[in-house]
Length: 158
Image 1: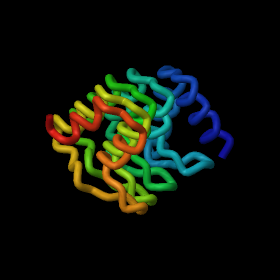
Image 2 (image 1 turned 135 degrees about the horizontal axis):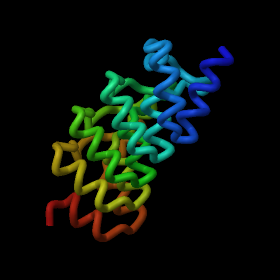
Image 3 (image 1 turned 180 degrees about the vertical axis):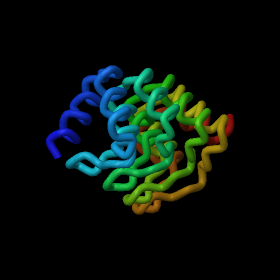
C-alpha cells in the first residue's frame, strides 16, 4: 500500500524516473487505482504531464480505462484544456465519445469549460454532437447556455 502511494505521488509530481522505477519492479502497478479511483494514466493526464502520459501509453496503459466516476484520461484533459495530451490520447485510440457516470462526454466538457481548440480537435476526430447527458443536454445546449458564440457556430456547423 505504501509503495502504491509513492508510485502515485511520483505520477502527481510528473517524476518519470520514479514512475519508471516502480513499473520496472512491478508492471501490474499500471493497472492499479489510487485512493480516489484514478488510474495512473488518468492522473498523469489530469496533471498535464505529457511525457509521463506518453511513457504510460508506451508501457501499455489502457487509454480508455475510466476512473471511479467513469472519466477517462481524455475526459480529464478536455476540461483542463491540455490539447497536446488530448492529441496523444486520440493517437493512441482514445474513444472521443466515451460517456461517464453522469452521462457526459469529452465534447460536453470541452464546451462547458470554453475550450474551443479542444472542441475542434474532438469534432475532427468524430465527436458526436447529438449525445445528451443525464440532464438531457447536448454540447450545443451548453454552448448556448454559456453564451459561447464561437462554440455555438462550431457545433451548428457554421
